[in-house]
Image (tube, rainbow over all chains, first blue to last red; front, top):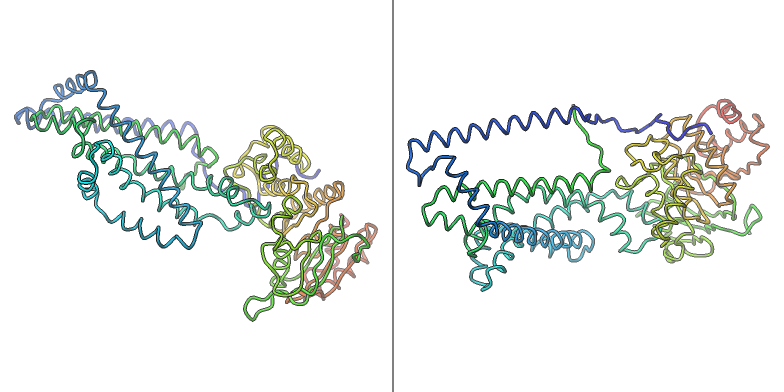
Amino acid sequence: MARSGTDRSGEGAPRVRTPGEAERRGGFRRDLIANLWVIAALIAGMQFWSMVAPPYIMPPPATSLETTGTVLQEDWRHILYTITRLVVSVGFALVVGSLIGALMAMIRPIQPYLMSIVVIDTGIPALSWMLFSVFWFKDPETRVFFILAMILIPFYALNVYDGIRALSRDLVEMVETFRPTRIEVFRHLILPHVVPYILMTTKSIIGYATRMTAFAELVSVNTGMGARMGLAQNNLAMDGVIAWTILLVFLNLAVQGLVSLAEKSLLRWRPEVEVR
Amino acid sequence: MTAAGGAAMIVLDRVDKRFGDHYAVRDLSFAVAKGEIVAIVGRTGAGKSTALHMIMGVMPPSAGTVRVEGLDPYADFKALKGKLSVSFQTDRLLPWRTAWENVALGLQIMGRDAPTRRAEAIRWLENVKITGAENVAKYPHQLSGGMRQRVSLARALAVDPELVLLDESFSQLDHVTSKALRSDFTELVRRVKKTCVLITHRIDDALEMADRVIVLAAPARLALEVRVRPEDRADPAWLRDRHRRIAEAMGGEEAPAEEVADGLRH
């Protein structure tokens, strides 16, 4: 045997630089320090402002933090409502949007019709969907679900469609030499290929989806973080508005973190590349 | 019956393939016997790959008939499931699958259960000299070009096909890696008694590996056939002569015949 199982003579071997563990840890520490500085500057700014403005404009940061603690103890059910609505709506949009994207890419005759629907959907402002939902649906949960689904589905549909179109013809030909069924092609080739596109879409829309959930709750229901924020605003309780804002930021960060974890696990096959 | 005297695995009978007014293949006829290793050589644009695509069944002929095991590979596409596999010029590995998972792809499509798939995939990786739990669990980007091509060959052989098609499978590798892989592959294919058709533009590859060399001249039509016996490969004068004749039939010199003969001997 001329070549051992570990040969790296490697014509076509990857010429990328993978950042080391120490480098990654260093980058994380640098980001953390920067974040802490920004938060400290924000708190200092709020403190200064609270000294010159009345409490209904800017309460002291300590009051807002205290209210955040109270909200966490007494209103945690509203946080759960928001999380549930967010997860159900994003999950539904992910499945339906990805299916629409796959149908657009795989069944040519229906592609122009579906594309037209998706493009029109992207052109309709979120505010219009909110107003439509108030007119069309009695049930508050249906309203929030409908608003979020209508806003999020096109993101998944368009990205999955583009992802499938970017699939290498060589890989399709390779899989076809084994004479698979259409379902097998979808399962072994198309689905794993579009996972990065689905994750990328989720990562980029999750912050937007969190904000939209709160917004939809504000106009459509009387439960959830958005609705409680509206109530605080009606009561001129700025500390309450700030408390819910802080919790929304943390919710957003937690969800982003979960998506990143899912990405790390599902895309562990992808080399980490650093361009110098 | 074929020129080799055995039952035919592949028969092309007066095949044409036209793209508009352009003939990529014209009046091409040849047969490949079961268990035979046949190399199809020709210059770039001679229609080798078009002929291979028709044998694979991904493209119908414009005229004439193509038969693989008596079936039309294009019309009876599904009927040849598991009987034919292909290794390409580039490895075409799925980047999200490890080495053994890539080899198991065909077995998965054939409906084998998970433990059988894994055991078979690892056995075929061992056959192409990729061993060790660490290596079989590597993703394609963690493997060298030579190793990736070995995985690709293992994937083609793992479904236990009757017919293996190689489309310039060794041409992108460096000389040393390519030679080692060619030698391992030929030994393996002879051991497991598979029929093999390899497409190449390198005459030395064809003379080294094949029982028979079919030379195509553009548009793909049979220009020359050369039968190669094991003892011929040890005869530099014979190799030089056949190399020259093949190069002439292809329509030009490919490499100095002396170098080829020397290269095959060492």
